[in-house]
Every structure is written in C-alpha cells, then in structure tokens.
Image 1 (cartoon, rainbow, N blue to C red):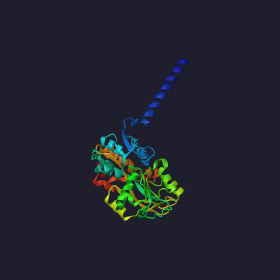
Image 2: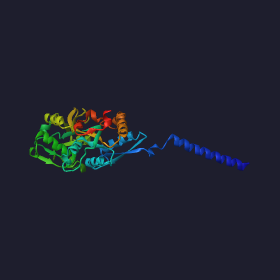
Image 3: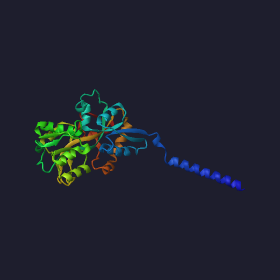
Image 4: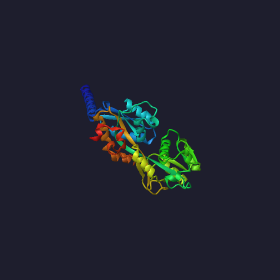
Length: 323
C-alpha cells in the first residue's frame, strides 16, 4: 500500500513538473531564436553615437521578429563600407561624411568605392558645431575670431573638418590667425592649451547638454559664441550636409542667452537590399517611440529622412520612408 502511494506521488510530481515546463514554454515562446538579427554600425564605445545606437536597438528588439546588435567602429568610413557590402544592415552616419562618400569628395576623394546602393531611413539627431571663446579674448561674433589664437583640431578629425569648412565659408586662411594649433580633443591637450590661454578659441562638436563642456566653461569662465553669420547662413543654404542649430538659453551658466549656430545631422542609413518589411519595422519602432528616445537624451528626436534631410538629391530614401 505504501509503495503504491509513493509511486502515485512520484507520478503526480512528474506530471506537475512537466505541466509547468509546457506552460512556461507557451507563455514565453522562444521567438528570439528565429528572429532576424539586425546589425547596427555606430561610433566607438563611449561615444554619443554608440549610446544612441544602443537605445534604438532596444526599441527594435521589442519586435519579436527582430533582434538588434550594435557594432562599434573607429570611423564612419568603416561603417559605410560595411553597410555597402552587406556586413551591416543599418548604421548611424554623419550627414557630411555621407555626402562626401556619395560624391567622392573630402576623405572619400581617393577611395575608388561606389556607395550608390545606400538608402536613408530617418534623421536621428543634430550635432551642433559651437565656437567656444575665452572670456578675455574679446570675441563676441564669429568675425572677432580673425587674428586670434585658435585650435583647429587634429588633422582628419571632425573638428578639423569643421574648422576648414568655417574658414572656407569666411574666405580665411591660416595666415588670418596669430596661431593655429592642431591639438586633439583627447588626452586633454586641447583643454590644457585653452585653459592656460595658449589658445583663445576652440570648436566643440557634439550634442547638448555636455557635462565635459560644462566643466570647461565653468573652470575657464568661457562662453559659447553665436554664429548667426551671413556667410554661415549661405553655407547652410547651399550645402545639404549642414543644417541650422540652436543651443537653448541657459543650457550653460556662462551663456544665459540662446546661441544660434549650425551643424550636421546623424542619419540612420541602410542599403537598397534591406527588405521593405524589415525596414518598415525598424522605422516604426523608432517613430512610435520618440518620447522614449527623448527621455534617454533631449537631442534624440528622430524624424523621417524624407521630411528634413537636404541630402535627398544625393541619397535616395528607402521605399518605406514615403509610405
């Protein structure tokens, strides 16, 4: 009798255990196993591009038929080339670098690579270029920079490219300045030179608010200079890679007023080989969660590429963009 009860209890336990396993599997089906994995190219780990990419990937992965993984890269050329070849599905690309790749200009002038198969999905955020000046430099406008000591950034850096763009728009050369340094932003070389007064003005490229920039402004009592300049306005009007940008009043204590400037846009780019259904799901995940992205960072406010991208003449939007 006792043996029979034990056998019955053992069978009951096994039945309950098996039932729980089956219930668990039905409640949480392993859809991710068969999900299509999206590989997204971003900037280096620690960059805002990588931060934005991770947040967007989380939204894409909410679709049970998709999973998303970020792949950090040392430069935009790496991402564009892998995107073109199909090693990446989507990538975050700066509008100026994208324009240069599509027109074989700038850093892409000597690369025998065709990027015609690239397509735009959405404009994700704006990257302002701001002029930072020491309080004792007597710089109130962009024209006041002429004759001063500046840092143009390390060669081939985005900062150096921005300095060349501004100088070209103004018709300036290095001879128009008392000193032009080429110090990198890393390893504190630029900030040390600026803090000591070796340089009087630098360019900052990035989203706002920026804690590191805020610390520099506080230590040096420096300020952001408004670049509401006719030559810059002409540049923005003629070059689709650039757009107007505004730093809201009070973003930094030393600059209580609104600062008008310009910058580039970061665009989510894919290739014509990405199927419409997948591209549509990615775009839907982003546009339906704008508020979630804004909570992650105020700069993240995506829009459809067809709505604001002035690069339409040089890059075609993916077919799902206009639907």
